[in-house]
Image (cartoon, rainbow, N blue to C red; front, side, top):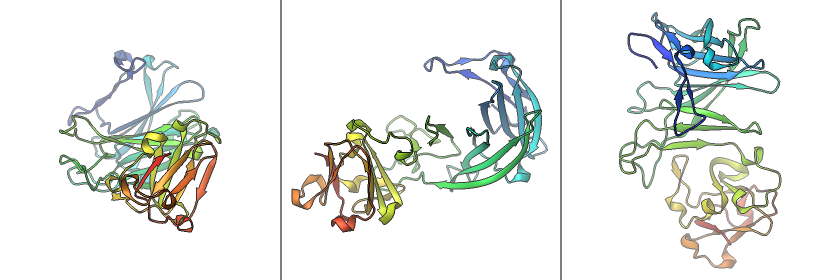
Length: 326
């Protein structure tokens, strides 16, 4: 939490009971009377202590990553400041969100999320995730170095039918974004929007998830675990429509879909899928499942991953208008 003139403070809440979050006692708080706090990230180190990184501008306007180490393995015992790193010198962005990622081999990274323009979402630009290799001082556990590894641009703007009048964006990284690490190691990214949509009285959010075969079992047996991914181009390239389970896959009219900012009616050119044995997803050339059975294409399940790199070879390239399990 920060103010314009009085610095900032880091607060901790327990969500052990999600419906009733509990604020940690004041001993755990981190008072920062001379620094802003634009983004915060925390992780547990191998010894059980917690590392906390705070991105903020000191009142000299320079962008720094301040390091804090927990006094003990209990967050409630508080933190001590261990160092301050010049983040701007390493090209680290003035981001809105940060996540610390730790590989099994001990390598550490920071994933920084934000929009590239400060006026978002009133005037919006690209939503970006940037990945940095993080090296800590072996003694103080403060930031020793940061090295840029890669960056990605995510599509959060919605076009087509049903677009909210309040905001054309399903999410915005300047509002909030964070990673979830699946037990398999696969990464999921979530982001929320700035504003509540008046017509549905809720705040929309968006999920970006990895290829399912990176975290799903090699053989599935339940229809609820089925997944299908259609691609705009041959060889699994271009925009991707991801379907999960039988409910997602029952689509009477593909012209009503928006996939990564554009329509997807008659756009599927390749497909990857994992469907249980004995089940099949039927693809139709016309909306509302009106095609003749001889004019359809069935994706037959075996429980294992199957790939069709070019639907034109099956006479179904750019023909998909509706789909459902039969």
